[in-house]
Length: 523
Ligand SMILES: Cc1ncc(COP(=O)(O)O)c(C=O)c1O
Image 1 (spheres, rainbow, N blue to C red):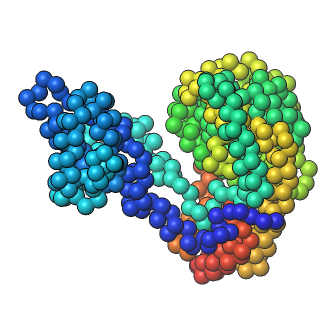
Image 2 (tube, helix red, strand yellow):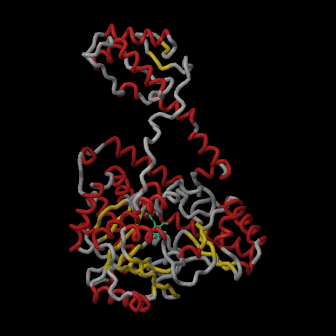
Image 3 (cartoon, rainbow, N blue to C red):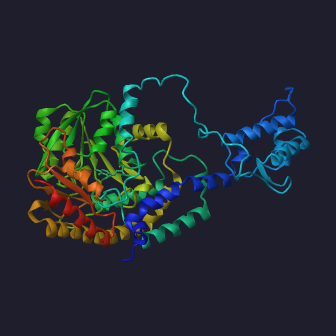
């Protein structure tokens, strides 16, 4: 299969320098000079001032240039256009431009394009544009501002190195289809894009999601119950706002998905970590710990991070608890598209007779993370509340990307994409597991998961996964320490390794580097 990924054309080592080049100030300057900001600049004149109009224009322009509010190379508006905009005589603007030309602030000729000089006569101000020194010491941050600031370390681009689990390989067929569908979409530019649309999302996409979920996941719902979101994280936020109040108790899996926990903690609810065993979430442990919890946030089809499928007995216990207490189950069915072996259990939502399950899915992994599109299926009595919350928060999902994904699904490309990627990812999963076993033997226990985009490699006794995570990063290998995913339960040591972001030729050398680091570590 041909792969058109950034890594197939450049080596992974080359990427950081390429990214640096893109952020390079020179290129940024070029982009700014072409962007046409001078035509939008808020030029002003005061008619009552004793300063002549030509001088006001001159001083303003010089100040804008020296403060770098306009970049060298930027094209200035024509004297005619600027005079008309300011409502002044053209001769005044011409005089101002001529003086700036004479002093070397501008280049070109009045009448045939005038530009800000790249070789300015006096040094530009040291401070970057728009940055000012605070007049007083910074006011202390509120507790919530501090808590959000603490998260900012995670809110950066993920590292583009194996085995981050935040990357996917999209093959050339999917990219070509995407290109073709986007061209059609922009050519037609449907009137729907020119106005506001349904806060729940485009009906064409909701219908396609409904058909897919009914067939592939046994979800029972009408398109009216589906809301298009920006992904799982957005759906969790919506569910929290609609269903929970600060102080409410909620069950979370232990170990579990840190992003769900962070979102819940930020909303002020009380987390009750419930242990996970070989059958998945231990419902009885949850009942002992917090029988009246308002909600349970779980990953039943592929427990995050351990990959366990919640047994049927546990599913029925969980649904019975929710029915009896009126609590909600938020089912995060992430990665369920990528099932490689074994019989999947249908979604919990399909077994729910009491309208307790909120089903959450995402396109950000099955397609690509930059898409930011997902969905939530809600019981009929909650549809209006979710739609109102979505409307208030950011009105609606973007219509263009929704239209694209709807067509991608409707024309059968989505199903074909999943079938192709399943084969590729299964192959890559087997390669990672095989290489780990070959190189590390008993030092590590890695089994091939039946579903998903990451695997767990358990370390033998005496290793510290957090310490190794740091050392491996220094060797260009990204792993997530398993022990970080635990709250109260005794943590196991191991790594989470994503196997969907990098082609085979990158995987084998990366496992070799990982193996060297682990082999040299003291157990
Ligand atoms: C448990 C879990 N749910 C959902 C997602 C996807 O999240 P999103 O749709 O917000 O990108 C991930 C991504 O890694 C995940 O691990």
